[in-house]
Length: 267
Image (cartoon, rainbow, N blue to C red; front, side, top):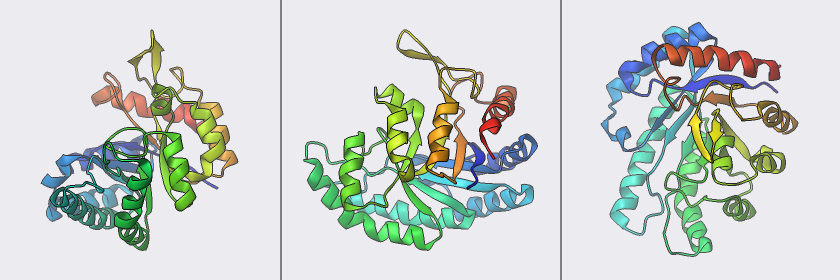
């Protein structure tokens, strides 16, 4: 088992060269690219340019995210558009050599979860098969971001029908939702397809800073315990989320200090 380190960055094609060079300089193996509706502005030419920049610096792609699209929408035109964008994203992710695809499900507000799950399985299974055939692991975003997987119970019901379904795990997001993130990981670490490393300092029930890993309130040793126990072998993708740690010199400090802390838990 071997976990690797990456970070979210450089999703605009003209940023990829700089992000890949920074990843190489700081000892990271991969970048993650995540898109909402900004995905629709991407072109084949830009993706090919990204692929060249990654190859130049020897940097992989841990995850390709397409978030916010409603793949189970009641409106046929909206659902068809979401599926067309997903089909396109699968091609782009394959071009970049992504290890995972991280997706939102969409939602049918007001409908019982069982009906949502039926529609999800009916409409998404062909796409999940295409993602896997392209050599990637389909993984679904938890809790927010236009998803029907807004709780652990929702995942548990989905796992009854589709045991191999993978979750993108972000401990800070589960904590913010008031859930026991260590229990989620302890029980279901084998269901994790991708992991975000997002530090936080909390004061008066709000996040006041998101510094490098090891400099906030998140217990990375305990989190890593359960990842090791479940033999997670994917990427730990750092999520620079707040200034002054998100860009420029602050981002570089974040990458260096976070790696220094997380490395002690890696083989």
